[in-house]
Image (cartoon, rainbow, N blue to C red; front, side):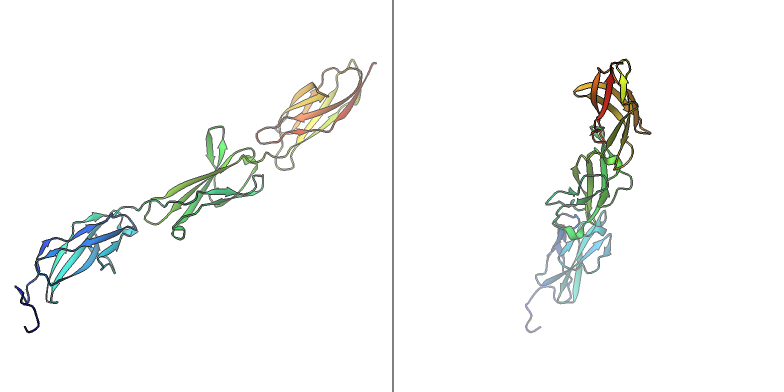
Length: 297
C-alpha cells in the first residue's frame, strides 16, 4: 500500500501482548491507579483502556489512570487494555485484579475545641477544627460529663454540635467526641474537653428560735438552704460565734433545712453566722449574722 511502512503481518493481524496489562498504585479510595500498557509485538499498535469493577465496565473510566471510588471497596478492580492495529484487528489484555480498600482517615490541621460559658443554663458549642478536605466531611457529636475521678458518662440525647448545660453538669468536667466521616474512608475521632462547670448558686438563711436566753439554756437556730439556679442544696452547715465553732448540722436533701442546737454561750451578745460548706454541685455560702443575747438569769 503506497505510503505505509513495510511491516510484517499487515494488514489484519491482531497484535500479541508479549507482557500483559498491569496496574500500579495503591487501591485505596481516592488514590490513583495507573494502567501499565502491555508490550505489543506490533509497534504500530494503539492501546485503549476500560476499567472494570467485579467484571463490569465502570462508566467513563476509559483513561490510563483511575481514581478509586467508595463503590470499589472490597471489589475486584481490573483494567482491559485493548491493542488495535490500523483500526482493523484488536486484542484485549486484562490485568490481574486488585481489591479496593477503604481510604485513609481524614487528618485535621487543628483539633476540636469547645466554646461557651461554663454555667448552668448556658450553651456549649463544639468546633470540629480545621480540615484540608472540610467540604467533603460530615461530623457527628457526642457530649460527656465526668463521673468520679477517672470515669466519664455519655449524656443521653446530647448528640448535637451545641449542648445546654443542666444542673447535673454543675461542678463536673465536660467533653465532646467529634467523629469526622468521609465517604469510603476510615472515620477520624477527636476529643475536646473543658471544665469544670461552675457550681450552682446557693443561699443560706439563719434564724434563731429565741434571740434572748439565759446562760443555763442552749440556743437553737434554724437554717434553710436554697438556690437561685436549680434544685435544693443539702449537706453540712457550720455555725460560728466569731471564730469559734458552736454547732454543726446536716441540711435535708428534701427541704434544705436543718435545726442546730448550739453549745452553751457565755453571757453577752453573740453575732453568730452559719456557713454552708458546699458540695461538688453547689457553691459555698454564708448567712448574715444573727445576734443571740445570753443573760445571767
